[in-house]
Image 1 (cartoon, rainbow, N blue to C red):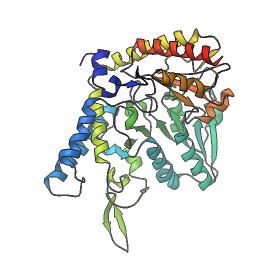
Image 2 (cartoon, helix red, strand yellow; image 1 turned 180 degrees about the horizontal axis):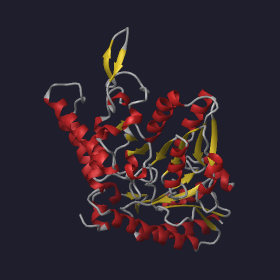
Image 3 (spheres, one colour; image 1 turned 90 degrees about the horizontal axis):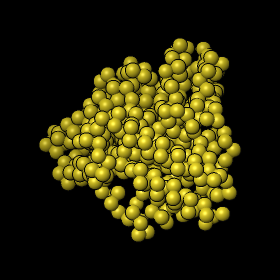
Image 4 (cartoon, helix red, strand yellow; image 1 turned 120 degrees about the horizontal axis):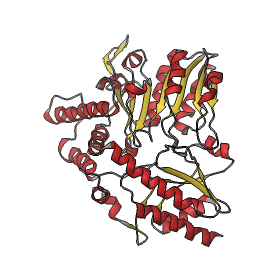
Length: 406
């Protein structure tokens, strides 16, 4: 499929609807992206024709569903550049994936007196699991700060990472600032002291993609629902040698090999970390979302989203009293802002009545708000289905709301 935004939009049924009698302008894809028709149809087909638990049945429905489930795993492994499908673990989402590492890896390899480094711009899901681990183990949390422009201060790594560092956790792309940090010095600094590098790829996998082997991260997490797939499904990539050294996080169901009251042995990776009934419908739907995205030249998506970002930055910057947070070159298509004298929630509610959906609040990144001394921001996050006319509608809507609220 050529990159024709109007043809792409036609693949997303929800974009044709109206809200309050106005055409929907959906600018909240950083929270949840909309789903293309082929994902919706794939999920419906499973429900209608192939609904059966995977890995556990010898009947036709189970075998067919298992084949599609493992096919999705292989497609996702190829999409992110994993060495093998065994390095792809299906989880309930990125939060679940990051918690799996914090518990399964952290319980075995972090000790009292160790330290865990997280960046200041992280989503709560890449902060709180490490805090919980540090509390359990008596470890220390260290913070890699960012500057007011939104750039991570990687020059401070030598003063933060040391011989007792066990984990360095960082985002590939900030869900608030849009910053895409240079991860190479961060991964290298972690490996230089024997620490693991854990990357939150929720935004990065959508905006620019990833090659996990080229990046050389040890673990990588992302959610399906931000990548045009279903909710309730996510991926944990882990280097196979690390996954095989980790104990299970949850017990029961698919993660077992043999069970007795004397001793239980566990399935090989990745099933060791997929306890219980798999979300096979979500996994198959995510595999279909990957198939959809791979129809397009990544450079074409990047160029289109870059044009949206440039237009939004230009139009919003012209509004009196408006400040954009995160101004680093090469940022992804996310614009967070506030306006002097205007509460973000008030602005968001007025835009909603105009059919424009944005995100308001702290965006699950309260330390970012603390850095700038604000209680919340407005965020417009763009996707491959957005248009320049929708950016113009956002700017016009913000100007109208400002006139009303001031």
